[in-house]
Image (cartoon, rainbow, N blue to C red; front, side, top):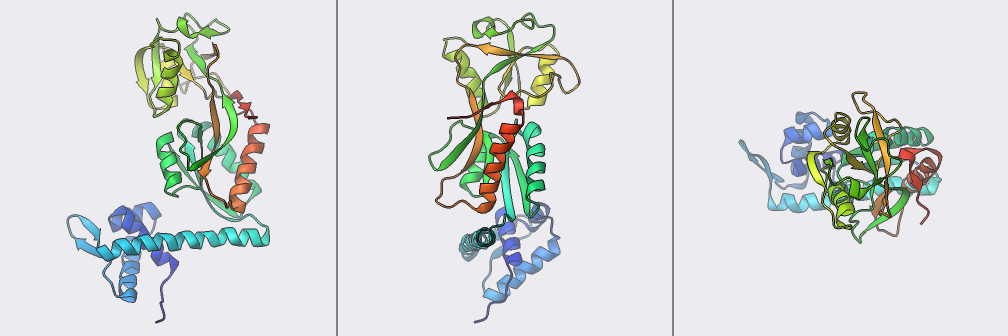
Length: 311
């Protein structure tokens, strides 16, 4: 039996199987709906099976055979992508796809500069990026949706490897007219009577609360924000102080108001920025190049005034 199908058709099928509709798959992979529909029909004819049940109101539902076919199709695509790595190793060149995740709070300060310099050094690598919170990034690594993620060393599972890049101690963010703005350092006991603008993101929230809890204190949370820029704006406009680890190059809020960044006094655990990847015995040439590039970039650039991680 001579099978006549393309990896492109398999990619379209997987996209529809994961999305649940041709229209949504079309938006995600930027391919027209008629092209996707034709590819699926050709696969069904070629293999002689029905992959989907067409439901007018609810889109497409995988048949039992379609679900099994989807599992094998994903494996086929993974093996096909692996051929890029094999080719790179054979030719000793760095080329092929690379999918990188980045923590949502870190991305505005790191991703653009890091990606531009990496693609400049390795023009035959095409990068896709995924910006998300810590929990979702770790899940995407486990599901092989991203090859690596720039993130924190918080709640890293055993099956994920974490390669540290830099340590980020906590600091206090204040408006220019805050009563504590003229201090050289601030003790956490001095903060409990002042309202706090909490950065309310998974894991980050727990980390900042732990700074108080380890000394038996509780912060006075006046406002919350799920975006670093919003938190900086609220602090600059006098809604309270903020705690953060990522320190931008300038001391201004998004709308141009002055901010003060004051070190937090005491022996508090810094968060560590690093590269999270699946724990495997094989690392592709593209991934090795990206990891080396990250280490070099963090050594040579003053990202957030970060300390280089040496342990």
